[in-house]
Image 1 (spheres, rainbow, N blue to C red):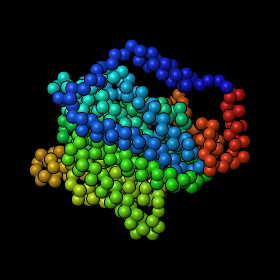
Image 2: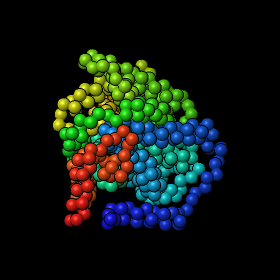
Image 3: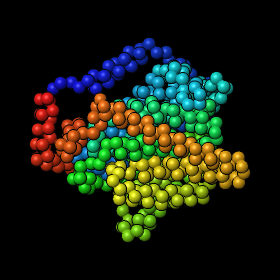
Image 4: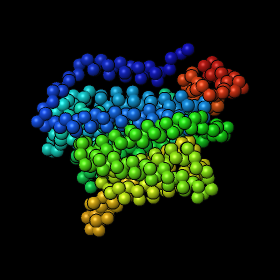
Length: 462
């Protein structure tokens, strides 16, 4: 069978990266413990492990929700990010996010190219500000931030599940990472970033992770269109997978939020407490709200509810009181539940409700952060009102930029590699058509298989 050009391009790129690695220099990893705090290092290593665990957790969470013929493909779309984004992060991603500031918008791509200057030392920017924590090695901060970059494009995949071409998705992941994620991370978390200079705070990724992935998911669902009618009617393949994934996400989120303090201190404990409380509040609120609307309490509802609570508290986890975390989770859970209901009664086929949960939760959570942080609207001062307005402005800019650039990315890639699989491939399932594998519970109809094989035969004869 003829080798497709897209795989040749990717293999050449991987080969060039491997060759460049031979000539890259490595900084020292000898720690100066007069500056490095051992407790902070131990905690952040632990938190980094927790955050990485969230991506396979997301694989189970999404994989259990789709039809049995698409379990493997859906899980792989999340899992593959651990490989692709990790490589890109070392080569130039960390530089784009946290390299020396260029106009408050992006980092210098050569600051940490191939992880040069990323070792055990603390890094001070040209403006005299410390990058990352003052008591942890820069390499550890880079590894911690890498896990955020990995899970963000993975979140998007739920919107176009069961119909996206795997190779096209990989190219979109690269586009999203470079064009959208890196600028947003720089503006929000770099000490000289534009949003940070405005007073906009995002403790662990309400803007950078959830709003961006949710809006990109919305653009993807619109661009790819609705699934075939018979595909949309398939039942979730494995609800225990969904519960397992939600549990892994909940556990991993403690590293996601509490680790974002960058210290083994009271703020980490506060973020830990608020994270667990918000998730528990959201789970119960989702179930009770469903029951008020005439539904039965469900395992799926409990799993989705707890994740919505985690999303809701992410931007403010280390800043608000535990009582405020309950209120924030309660309000955002109801908003997201209504958003899911609206989506289910619309023409929008966001397969796993990524925008109604992650996008809406991240956006509303960021707005509520502008209300409840000490320097925000709740302070009652004019400066607090201005900070709140800057949070609103940041949300508006992120939504507009992310949607426009995501849609442009889908459109450009689709011109070269069709983003959507054929109807025959969709009906036989992406597990088989994209990966030549199948999940144990999957049943491929002989008629659908024959239709798919005929489609492939005609395609290659042309």
